[in-house]
Length: 602
Image 1 (cartoon, rainbow, N blue to C red):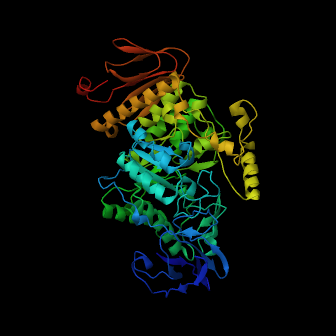
Image 2: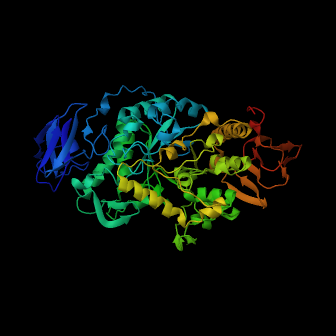
Image 3: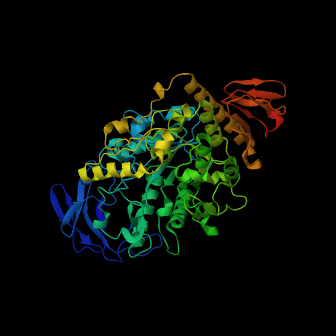
């Protein structure tokens, strides 16, 4: 490849490679074609060109005598976030997925995993070895938490830098290609979590090259990315090219865009709309579906409204209100933002209308929040879960709901997610009731930054009422301690015993029910609702009726002649009703054609 970099305000740029320093030449503002111009054909000023570099060469750029720094578009960082970049030929990989026709993120049973804690090895290759098992239990889309390089070897990945590269401890960019190829062979789609709203605090050298950031806005993580100020055209191109690269050169099927509400953009065409249009064009070119899934805190379905109709054009968006409604009801927690949730009326509303706050007052925020979804909105546009990396890892000790919920409550949470009208997502280990924590961990090499993170994490939780939640004083795990990361590695082989076996069997029953509902198209015809006929007895109406007895007494349930699809716990059936012991559930085939009952396998 030819060394090139955007540095619009530099007087001199040099490429350091092979022990030599080569002066680079400023490209005339109207020069170049194709990749040297934006997709509208406009010139891209501020670029510098240098020597040809073969695959495997290390290189870095000095700007006006400072540096050298890694390439902002570095494909590999084998020496860490502060070291030189390495040329990587993405086109050299021998793909075997020619028969793969793609997978739409909407409606796909999605499995969120963190590469570093999904296996003891913590690599993409080790994770790939488990993909056939995930396909066998019914998973359809694997969502990888961010893989961009970050300091040290351990971390969540949301402090990544060099966003065109892949973390070396995970195996680097070639390992990501092998992972995606293996996923497609197993019949699984791949969604990659990408972070465009900020960069990490260590190893972020973008500001040395140009106006990638702006102080016109604030984010919780520092500088805002420049999407609408001077120089923003090239910054937008930087992010869009990154997204297209994962989808094109790495065969990824979907991107999950982190916290898009922190992408401040007041330009006539929002960056997300631009990205949506460009991804749609690439999808048409490749002949397979490509999805964009936004994490948004705005409770606004403009996010998933087509660009042609004035929206942002995302394929789907995360819906935290559904998580909060399920979690608060099942756990009874009311600290922090859970103060807004917990009633059965809340559960019922989110199942019918996606958002609890849709223009209503949020006591937690102290103001009105959100807006109603459009009539007829396909609820598969919303991704829901009962656990994810945020909601587990950002608890004081990273405890999962399965550590304290009864087996019946865990089964209810799985059913509420997997049989909902939404796009369901589970967090790694949830399919068998993993009880090991998933905690916040880092590996910063800068001692001052490491200490700041330790103190900040402890201070963050000091006033959140966690002592009341746990019933005793809480010690926040040290994120820099390697033991914190080790404690977070899932261990399905150790998850043995009756409860784990029951959860696994129940998960399989839910996957079978989903397949039946998908075949009969029942989700679109029958919206879901929730009621509580008596305290701690939950009924979900919809294509399948779920009756969950979370109380401490047996409950009679009329089954109206419909045979049950599956049961969990101690359920005694008679001709017209069932008796649910405490912590028991049944699924009833209430909305499907009766002719299917005699023919399908039970």
